[in-house]
Image (cartoon, rainbow, N blue to C red; front, side, top):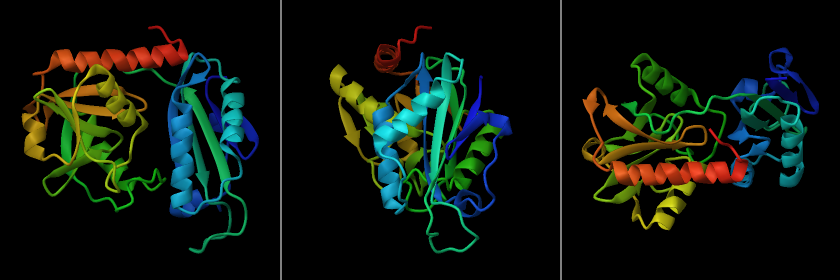
Length: 281
């Protein structure tokens, strides 16, 4: 099987699976999710993704039916049924099932998993950004299913032939539609602090750890649009693209001024991934 779906204990080919119309995810986007790359049967940084899922669920008062270890066992059981070498593992928990009403239902939460083939991005290839006002709510630190502003922003990026749309509140850059955004300036990595305006990405935390190991200074603070345009490098990080850099934002040439530092970071990120999963291009 190359693409698998799972819902509350039932599994099968992804395009044949269905969920109840009364699942709270359908009415309210009332749930949380995680997504991670798996290679050679190993889910990369799974513990960190699991910790964030449980934190997101707690912040939304969603009661999970499984412990972290039980959920990991289910993910690996499903992963063992897929033949592809590299896949995207996605899992979400909705608040439960019930006729449409805003108050919480009394029943258990619902677990959904999808696993599908994934072609790894070439992290050394330059990408393009566009900028877009951040109209999202103030709970961006929760990995909730409510992603309509992100979906619209990602579509604007696709239409512009760009990889990512970079959100900004006023003049301050927050994050991308599906990634965290950082800059390198004068040998220092600068990234928005992990508050309620951004999702604290797993790859973001690894990026900070990598910089620490390599002796690269870091600073947690909001940076401006003009700082991003003037940066030595403009970087996006995510679980599926690792660490990539832009050479164009809103049609203007950017970055390319710290290629040695950027490559050191990217090489270390790929070393981590290969070491944990045994993946070899």
